[in-house]
Image (tube, one colour):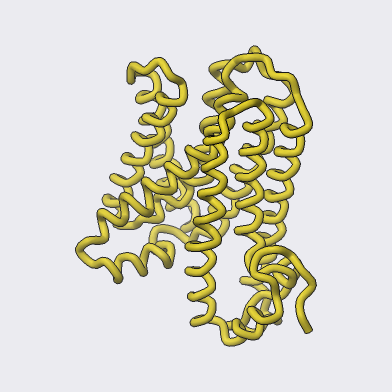
Length: 289
């Protein structure tokens, strides 16, 4: 067994246990509302993930959770109400599944093993010291779970077992989400290949492909995906509050994730200030000469 497969086998077993904890919670916690049962199961799985992160002394145990759980929801909806599924149900399930497995695959091929922990978590450990564990649970585990759940909430109104008449907004939502997934696909593939590009000057920014038109194409794709999911829900007739998850995603990426990433790049890339002055922050645009 290769060195990469050994840690992957252990993380796979961990996620099987996490999934089982969610299934048991969903089946045996007495609640009438489907969305409440899903939320409780989601929180239980997050707690189990946090316990494993303590055991492994590595908060990156949570990294795959972001992309795996939405597909877990799709599977649950399939087993609950697939007999009432129509084209829009299958299309939306494909959109979420495509996003989920593409992102999970990118995590897998980029994950070196248990010796790696996300640089943001490492910074948090240094910054908060003995107070790190509350931050670990609240910011690294609980908050992402809640914002993904809020962003997925719109789909509860699609997969509630009631026949839906497809409309333009539902199709548009899927198109926006899929465009976002392709932004991420192209961006992450270019980023991955750049690691093995011996012709690129070490310590400089990537200028290939879509990275020459926007500095944050993967974050742009992620925002488009969640906006698309919100649009699907609104097309179904979901309440306006279900769009708050997508708004929260945009705010998180624009005011937290992107600034943190670009601060790190400014310290590690010799040409970042030049790159920053020439290439758009988010919206793809022709680079300035």
